[in-house]
Length: 446
Image (cartoon, rainbow, N blue to C red; front, top):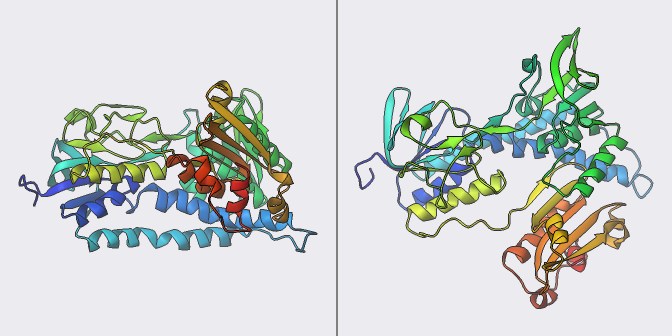
């Protein structure tokens, strides 16, 4: 019981990273916490998002690595077994909801299963029972957007792809964001004939476009058809297959992926009725993640926020709220440099000041480009292409980086502390990295 005679100090609506990562340390600090979830505990990322995706992608990356070593120490090209890969993915993620729930219960958090509806500033009703709390945290995440054209119900979303046990011979992907490119990569490397329909002339518009174009060329070299500036107008069934009719042409497929984005879960559980301000971009919050109702906060993908709607930012927000609720801070939230990556083949990853911003402000930043194909370590890996771009300020401090390569995600993880903790060039030069490693060669390019 909370000190204000509420049942809970904090009650979370949703059980994803925007909730459980903060709820556990909150409970360990002596606060009474509860989590309400209508689906699987853990939310999107563990059950039908990042974890499942990367489990499917590991064999893809391994296949690419082995392909690169043909004639350089390895013989025999592997083939991805689609059914076995999906089976392995399910084995990986099936244990996560139960493990997370057990972790919550082990520290005294009440896990309430059912559809929660906010009925007032301190109350959420679930299956006819009302639960009260001093503070509510909305962490309801987001759902897949559905394209608004006739026949849209014939298309599938990302969750369907992760559960697709039979490999399609032909797949049409509508969209050009993370999900479109990553799932197209997985399918193409497994041997599916993939067509990507881009509404505009660019994909992955938040990333450095020369690198994105390199990635698209790599996909096209694998047989992927990339169609730009196309407007899907309808989807129709044609015998045992489907056709996407557009303003340019008709595109036949055995399976269609609607990857046109994700929308925040803001409707149908009482936000409007209790006066929480939100729109199609998400819940509006101040710099303490507080909504327009003083006792209600929000975290994760349901937020309308400028930083990326990523798992790490949801975790950061949830942990920040724990500090706020326990009195460990009264400061507004201040995000660190947030890395992001596209887990395609090759990968693109970036952090900090973008290349475009740096090149537009030559009086503030310097840009150093490194061709990885000439690096001995990458040559030993048989990575015959790739590029790193480092951005430094005029004092030589690293403030941003972006890379395209098979190891771009790992490289950006290596560089993140140097950017966030503003490590001086002198201190960086005093580091003795483990050699020979990816880390040692990464630092050589700075």
